[in-house]
Amino acid sequence: MISFSKIAYQTEDAVARIVLNRPERRNALDQEMLTELRDALRISAADATVRVVVLAGAGKDFCSGMDLRTFAGEVSGDLAKFQAEAQNMAGLMLDMRRHPRPIVAAVHGRALGGGCGIATAADVVLAADSAQFGYPEINIGFVPAIVMAILRRLVSEKRAFELIATGETISARTALEYGMVNRLYAPETLERDVHEFVANLASKSTSALAMSKELFYRTDAMQFEAAIMAGAEVNASARTTEDFQRGIEKFIKKT
Image 1 (cartoon, rainbow, N blue to C red):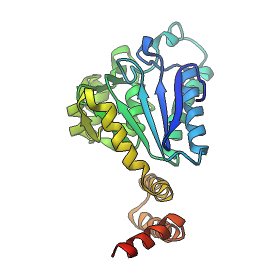
Image 2: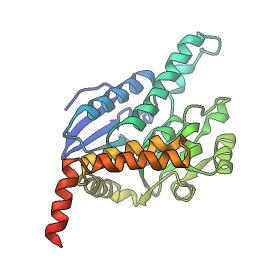
Image 3: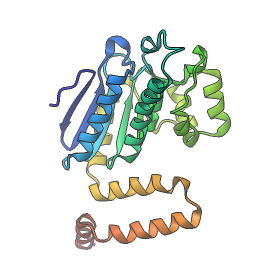
C-alpha cells in the first residue's frame, strides 16, 4: 500500500486500483488530488506487475468535478497561476492517454465536469445504471475546456455541443447511447462486475494490450494511409514479442 492524502492506491492480482478519496467533498478535485492522481499513474506505469488500472471514487459519487472553493476570490488573480493549474489537469488527461496499460473507470453516483472528463478519459468506462454524467460548467459561467477534446472524440458534434452549452446532466443509459460509456451494471453488482471485467482484461497479453493502446490513440490525427502503415509497423513488432510466440505455440497445440 502506498500512502496518499486524497487518493488511495493499491495493487492486487496485477491490477492497480486508484480511488478518489474525498467522499466528504464528493471527491471534488483540487490541485493536490490532481498531482496525486498523476503520481499514482506514474507509479502504476512503472510497475511491471500491473496489467490494468482501475479508477473509482469513494463514497456516494465518482467525482463531482473541480472543487469550486479553490476558485473563490480568484477572478482577478494571477493568470500565470491559473495556467499552471490548468496544465496540471491537462497533464492528467495526457498521462491517462499515454499510460501503457488499459485504464478502466468504474463510475457510480455522479461524474460531473472534470470528474466526467476523468471518467471518459479512461479507455473503458463501466458504470452503475443509476450513475449520472454531465458538464455543468456553463451554469457558473465557466467552460469545460480541457475535457472538451475527449468529449468531441466520443460523441457526435451536435451531442457534444448540446452537453457543454446546456450543462445538462444525463443518465447513465443516455451516456451509453451517446457512446460515453461501455457497459452498465446494477449498482448492487457494480463492484463484482467490474472485478470480473478487469480480471478478464488482465488475463490478456500485456505487450499486445500496450501496443494496441499506443497505436489506437496514435492514429487519431493520422491520414488513412499513414494509419495503415503505422499498423503495419506494429504488426511486425508484435510478432517479435514473447507473448505472441507463446500464443502461437498454444494455438498450434490446441489445433
